[in-house]
Length: 516
Image (cartoon, rainbow, N blue to C red):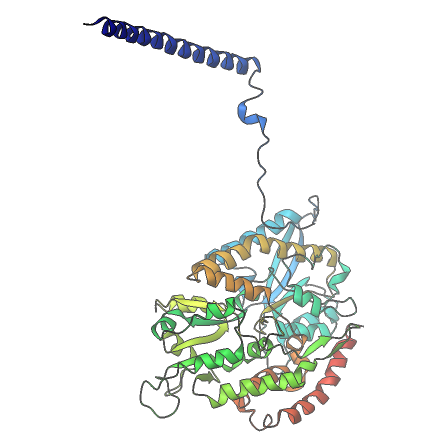
């Protein structure tokens, strides 16, 4: 071995030895540092750990809280709630669905928070053509007779309007505990129904029927794809979802599939629906029957008879009556040879239908496996936002003017809505309609849009005050023209409007007087 090689070899050995020594020193220092660190922690007696140097993050509650004091205690006093026996699932359910369990949980929570006993009392209610509602009669007999049994009352929307005109409802704005600016109340109703600072009824998360009965447009995504049509979602995204576009869209859809002359059950349509949903079309076009003027007075809306409204009526009347692209049932009954809107849509023979949001469950339960989407109804033009309506039969709530414990009833009223917002709506809205019944994320966004665009019309609520149900007849007649036997009276819209307005004005004054 050469000298140079020997020196290199020895140098390498020394380097290896030094590296080993250095490594041991490093390990020793690390061990000592860990030991001292552990001793320091022991010296603090467990009072501080590295994770204690930052305060723990507080959990955030996504739901707004109400302002009901924590120390309220009514000593298990009873609050009697009178309700329509046909709708127990909204008040005192016995079923085991997720929503019904949530309602029961809400009731229990209200009782615990306020230390009250909720006494749910069913009675005959519902829709009565004559306006002589048995529900109203029950409340009226209780108040006029001085029995003063009931505190909170709830029934079919049109019945409640009749109760308000008869002085059976307290003014809810007298009770500061009820916060109508809170998200658990339907803000449009609270605004449009407040006259002279008086509000006789409310709705929102206190009612499951409020959400279930929002009108919307369903479409068959599978059929849209099969016919290579543009996605309606794109039109909403581009803010071009208008009635004129929708009607043109439907021109691409109709087909005589069964070779039967005329409209038949086997044909393919752009839209099938029932005449009852005519009110949703009426409001979607920016129309209104009753509204408040700048001074807060209740008046007939100009949108019933101005030129813009007349153009909209002419557009929809032509579409619903003169086009093969749409079929409207006058009834939901199955008749031989008559198109049934539900069956036609569920069988995949129409792209669109208009119904309440609860129809989503019918689609799922049908077993059709249809992939469907949810949309707001189209708007008339760019001068308006989307406007969605609730079926006139949705439940409204009020406090009886005969309640001997109105203050406690008002607190319970607020608590039922607030707890419904936190406990019931998340199940009904998020878990049921937005997630289970909606097949895609976009449909969930559409449902949010629909809910945010809900509008109310006092003419709906006060229908019984108008002879022969004029508001209901008008929404369908102005939209459909010849549907439901109104062809003769609606041949000349302007003449019919003049006739209606003359009679309606007197009723409007009667309604307005009840707010004085």
